[in-house]
Image (cartoon, rainbow, N blue to C red; front, side):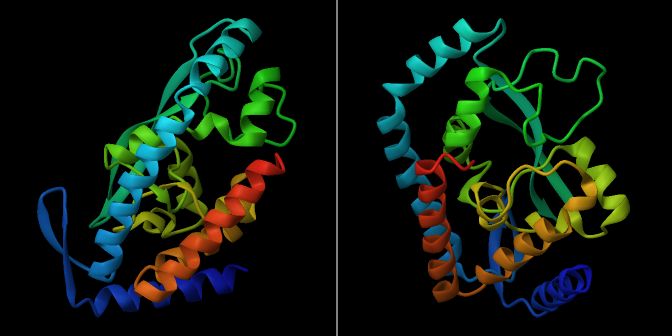
Length: 239
């Protein structure tokens, strides 16, 4: 798997070095390997889909908020720093919005920890939220703000990324010129990971997705497949 990941990274780097298109990132024109149709098509889809999703979920949000408050003490929502789109080796940091699914003392020692299967820190309501992916739905707001896309690599925490990159160079490059996503290829192929040693396959999936969006036809096929798989995951409560 590690050799495959390195091969994917090399392919991606070659595409970056043979760039012919330009895109505006943070109000700056920069070269990009992503096709212009994909750039504008993804953003159009993100705005339309997220607006519709939020309108559809609006009646459900108060019920989830009540359930969270009745289950455990603490806020309904919580903000957490994540690494966003990368440009020239620098990732933009933003606050992701989520329904709280863990106790307020989940990281009382101040050390960032990956979520695990059957994680004891997850509340009763939190288990339902995570299995149905409802805990992620407030991130449609992040999508509308242009900080995320509906589909893309999972936005990772800065503290964990620093640890992971010591073992896996180019981990930050997952989001090079690509917005992190609410769902994505790695998210539907894998569940929660318990160790940074288990992330090599996730990294490969993320680079596969990044390569797919360099071509409009491949992008459409990939995004449709991921959306369908996400719907199945939600319906089966396999989050």
